[in-house]
Image 1 (tube, rainbow, N blue to C red):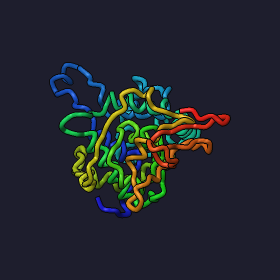
Image 2 (image 1 turned 30 degrees about the vertical axis):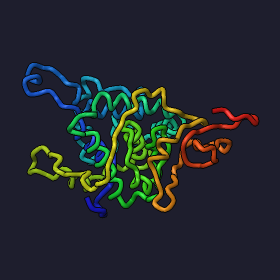
Image 3 (image 1 turned 135 degrees about the horizontal axis):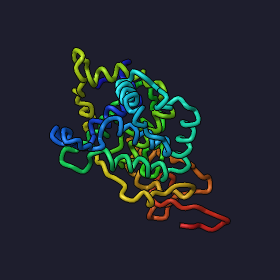
Image 4 (image 1 turned 120 degrees about the vertical axis):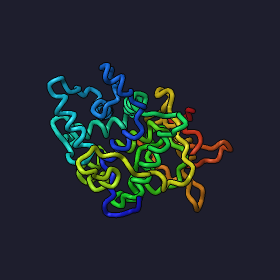
Length: 295
């Protein structure tokens, strides 16, 4: 996908790409027997909404048809909001932003539940790798996203600029998806802006159901390694933040040093490498308190 005026990252585009990475669905026979796999697009959107609003109320039996229509329209970037899609609610946006930047493990736990329930990963098909590459290509092609724009995609919620994304090879799936979703919720409330991009990814088919026909992600030719956090409880957050792994993922062509911008930066915090030389970029994160240094 080339960089042009039509390319925009939006909630609908993000959701469309997530659907391409969905776990295998049950066949026709199972559906005829009335068996549900729980992987429908509306179910998936509800789970994604719960990442933003943990206590989101699922549609009732009487509102499921309306929500199904909302799901289709949101995916195709025809709508930005509805009664059931409160993406324009400033309180919702503010609460999610705060959760990601100050209660990261809690936000990451919700995204981990979403990934475990819906995304196929760790298989030879490499849907998870394709998903990461597709999102990276969209972000790169979207010229409305400045190179200084920060995405909170580091393993522990560290902020990494769009410019530095180009040098990254290693991605934690849950953290990456959470960071991109956070960017969309906070910065892209106009989902309709992605309509032209959706038409590129899923061209009209004379009224028939649209199919994803693109090879989005092929433009990312460098090696991409996708891993997952097994225990969210191991993720550091707050003033004592382990940023080593994310920092080692991002390098400068000139100096080899990281330009990582971790969240919740504490002026008391310094880092040292394994030689004992003070650095500002990687290895072990420590904090000074009342003149004492605590590892």
